[in-house]
Length: 244
Image (cartoon, rainbow, N blue to C red; front, top):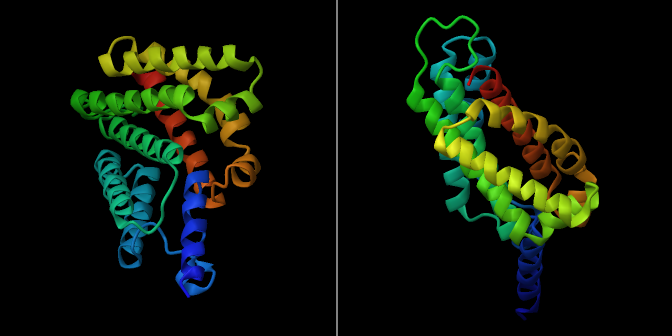
């Protein structure tokens, strides 16, 4: 009598182990699952994101709205984490949350005044330093994944030449860059190296949506979100590389 729900639960657990969330809700007979954020709060989150993005794009109170975007992203990530609507594999959680931390760091860098062509007010060094620390934490997570995540290691092996030697080279580079961002020394040079390092990784690894969706069972929208966040991290690196 309980065989159906039990098998549905096993399928959900297996999907989480593969990485992607359970795309079907067993209670609804195969209907699409609920979003990560509860629906009433999801619309407020979307509205806040569009509002902050619009004002930042037009350069209206960019610092304030960049700070608001960082706060909005932190709150939405926390709401998704505690919501419990979907379960991801540990390796995918590291990919998702580490990039969210990096994007928050990028917004803090933008809120500090870095990258402004005509700076009317002095930049906030405290905000920029905090953003750099967040970027360093992201790089530590990427380096950790290259050593302990089978999925990330296989992605690099399948898409980049050089085999294991290339993985170890990326591990060392990510570690050194993380130390630079965390310590605050040679930040401009580290950002320049990161800005050169990210495009091939984005194009060859993150950009292969078919690989992640078909092989690793990462939902299409989630992989597109990860790819967009990689573009945002690249933007933060360019800002620090040119105005660090």
